[in-house]
Length: 261
Image (cartoon, rainbow, N blue to C red; front, side, top):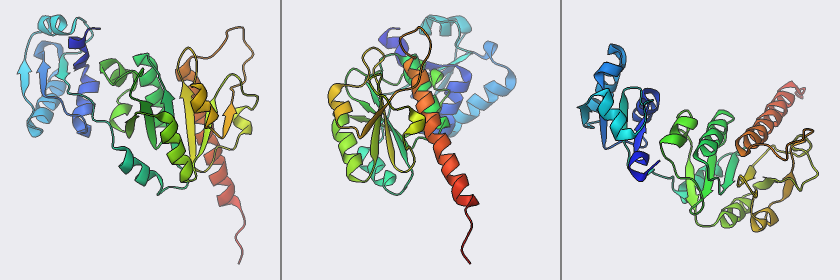
């Protein structure tokens, strides 16, 4: 996908969800009436009008030529650079919770993996996602669609140093746990309640050595097949689920505990 296509977000659900949330607004929208039913066309027109965003009519073939793809679903939005969240504000917000889970992604380069991980992070209640400034997939149309719009709902921070970010979180009582094939402890045997930083690494090499070194513990997902490793998006989803499961069990246990009179 060329840089021109990367600037455009297509797909009715992706475009409308981005407009509804209002965090990352397009500079213009193009709509092929012939490819949309009346209700969808009306909703798109209403949203762009309320947000004072130019909405231009075009043909389906013009959209296809613009995007170099056919699965545009009748609309496309020209997007500015993604507005990453401010680290200092996110850090302040995180200290207000005793059970926040922060996901740190170390150089996830495939946009589909990045989007799928963001989708799992949002579904399983991650409080924020941190990515590096270099060697990391940016937020583009592929990421938005793979995330099913989750990118619009998560604080997403870009940092020059993931190690520094993790250390700052540790200073406010976060425990950092990295997924690593070298680990001997399974996620189910690691305490993942309270303030937790989950570190997930690059598709090919995993987390960097200096990042793993600053973590409090390492975990490995048990495997019994012949394939070397899980896809990084699948692995991240399993780790995030385990955090959510342990927290749910902990809450249930607290609620079931007898109260003193």
